[in-house]
Structure formats: C-alpha cells, structure tokens
Image (cartoon, rainbow, N blue to C red; front, side, top):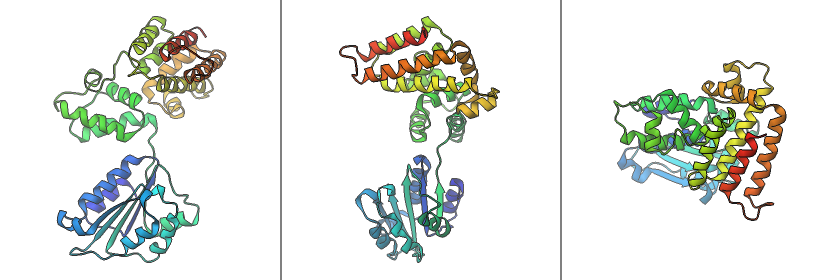
Length: 333
C-alpha cells in the first residue's frame, strides 16, 4: 500500500489490524508512525489503549501479548513497535498473523532494511497484513521533492536553491525537512526561498561549498578552486576532510562513468549518474577536461590522501594541508 493510501485510511478510520512499515527511507515510516500515534485514538483513549515499544528492549512474544489485549473504554487499541529491525525473533509474529486481535491496530516500524519477500515470513506479511515499503529516493529526484514539500507548506523556492540544498544535504529526507522546517519559520511566505536566503539562514555558502569546489575542479579553474580550498582550510570545523574527500570521490567517479556512456543525452546521463539533469552539463565539461588516464591518477591521489588523513604515511601534515596538496595534484593530473 502507498503512503498516501495509508494516510487516507487513518483519516477515514478505515484501518487494518496489522501494518508492517519497512525500508531504507525512515522518513515516511516515522511520519506514518506519528500519524497512527496521533490520529487513531482520542487523547483520553490513548492513556489506556496506546502502547509504544522499542525493538531493542523487547522480544516478539511481548508484542503478541500486548496486541492480544482488549481495549479499555474504547473500540480500538493501538500498539506501535519502533526500531523493530532490532528484534532477533520477529518471525514468531507468524503465530499472531494467523489469528489477529481485530480490535488492535498493530504498527511495526522496521527501519533501514526490508524483510525478504521471497522467504516464508515475507510471504506471510504480504498476504496477511498491510506492507509499506519505504524506498530511498534517487538523488536526482530530491530537488523536485524539495519543491513539492516547500509548496505544500505554502512557500516558494527557486530551482537553483532546491538543487543546492539537495546536493549539500544529500538524500536524507529527515535531515532535509528539518532544515526546511527551520528555514520556513524565519522566511516570509511572500518571499521566495533563494540560495542567498539558504546561505544566510542555513549556512550553505553559494560560493564556498564542496559543490562549487567540484565545479571549479571540473572546469580546471585553478584560482577559484584554490580560493575555495583556502576557505575550507581557514574553517576546518565546517569543512571536515572526510565528507570533502567522499564528495570528491563520488564526483570523479561520475565523470569516469560519463566517459563510458553510449547515450550522453541529458535525460539518459542524468538517469545513469543519478543526478539532476541540471548538473549533466557540468559532467560533460569535466569529462572534456579530464581524460580516463588522468582520472586514473586522480583516483590514486584520492586513495593516497584518504590513507594519509587516517595517519598512514603521514606524521605531521594537517587535514587542511592534505586538502591543499590533494587539490593541487588533481588540477595538475
């Protein structure tokens, strides 16, 4: 069942006895758990008929025992199991699914992983309860998702701002919504959210961030790349070497993939690279500036400096110094 369908069933009070919420994207699982928690029972009914348990603290037998209890002074009882992925004996739930308590709404939150639907327990879940599979969004879908989320909250955001946020925050929807919610508290609804506002309120600089560094490297803009890396060196708390190195590896990996694409049209390239089509031209430019042979040497540098950042063959060079050296070697590959 889809997320919107489950939300609609909660609103309409057309509920099933068991919901199994699983998948790599915890955002929608948390949202659904919150909806079940707040919107099925009244405040008074919740006191005696709503239970929240955590998988790391219990065993499946306790879940079954809770689910089999009858409601007190209400038509329904809600049992929510959070972090159910920590349960080591969840397959025991089979016995309850064979004979569910119709007055109980059992909600199981199985986050950041999924049950194998080909195995017996997975097949039982599919046939005897509502299963919601929360899948991660591809990175190239995140800017569009940001636009929709902002618009649904009555605000406006320009496309470049959505792209900057997506590239900076990644595909973690909970992290993205947290930043957007804070931003929407201080921005006037009549005011469009721009990169300038993001820079001021969130701290993502439109001039000094890892994505501008990548762009400068891709275009072989030596002066700009050095200006950005000097800014990073002067602000090490905001620009730790680990995420910078990770971002650079991912960036050059995509450039290598672009070299081998048979169909280099923006739509096809964006799909393969899993980036927003807005960025495809950047990879095209970078591929023109870095041959496959040069990229090979860059990957060697990235591997070497990753080890040095961990203390291998490096006794005294700071992380800031390592980044400066790395950028020099990339530009002169």
